[in-house]
Length: 54
Image (cartoon, rainbow, N blue to C red; front, side, top):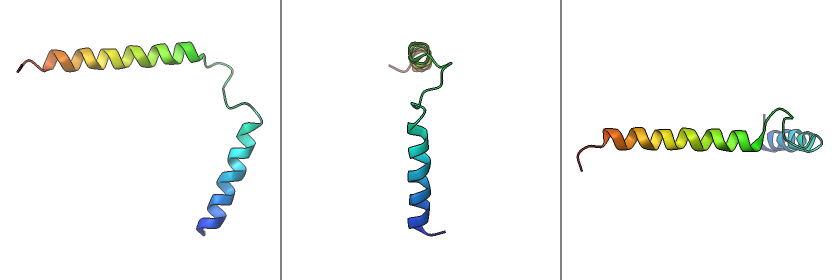
């Protein structure tokens, strides 16, 4: 498979995704963002608890 044919397949695959809007109906952006924020804050809290050498 050449680079050109691979790129052409990826472009056609991306064009098919644009027809549907790109978002799944069951995914709420606020819930996804809130969950990601919670996980990042939890990881920050865990990291600061283990960093006791300051």
